[in-house]
Image (cartoon, rainbow, N blue to C red; front, side, top):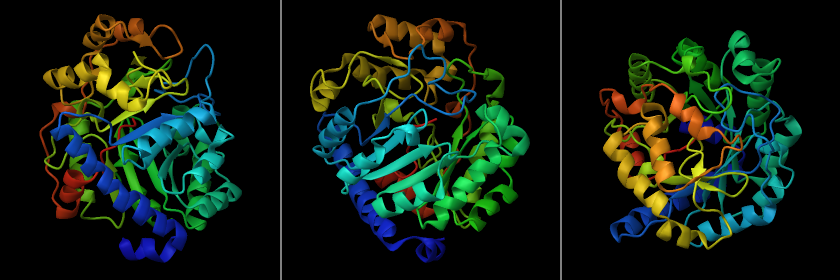
Length: 391
């Protein structure tokens, strides 16, 4: 895998990945752990939604159905990055909507050459020209959502010819020499594809560097809970990933399990938090409630003072090591009402939706499957490799 990446990656992009993501990322996670030991808190990294605008209408997307789309000002985005860098963290996940519709984005990337950005994109507008521009910027890895084959993708994504356009985006990115990832939100309609050798090998043949698996979480206007995996399917997915890490010539990333195979909630652990396009500071993208906003006080003061975020980290582990939105949505509503947290969904009915939602198994309800490889065990214990928060 390392030889393949070295051979096919632009040298400047590779340098930025090793230094900004690898070295600085490990150091930032170590700083995060030291802060926790001293009773202090500031996330190891942020996930930032820069815009609610999107050219698709996906099932289970948290930004659909908003009364009015928001777009983060570049001044706010730069402020978040600057304040986070001041705490020794240099990695950011950039989300949407579709972040490639956010016009100031590349200027922000250029403004912070000492950082590393993971660009979560549906890929449908990732042209060869955009890929070449990202190569020149060099501190960005596109993570392209791949939600199914020709029959499934259009339904899942609410668009036309999505599969073909996604495949083209992957090829555009790898042809430009970018460190390229593919993400799949595994659900019932793409489960067989996700766990197939053919699918993984097809990505390797296109020089994809890493494959990031999530479990589908039913949120947003078109939540579609019938797509959520069963407990048995989640167990199968976890076992497949552990085995795949020793089988395939590609990095297999997950967001929900630690090195011993125990369920992990990045928001409850404090590894990451999400800032939406309006500047609301949320525990994670699918918990659309907040008591704090960017600009009201410095970020380090928000994280030291927010009773809502502090108590959430204390209370969720008492309920589950999985996803509280799936396993006990009614409790979550009670908790947010107790803290007078504002509905940040943009739809105005998130509490009502969660009240009516049935409980669904998540990654916290299975039998632990420990990592087999020492590299993955080490990376999960000593760096934030694999410990994302996006779903």
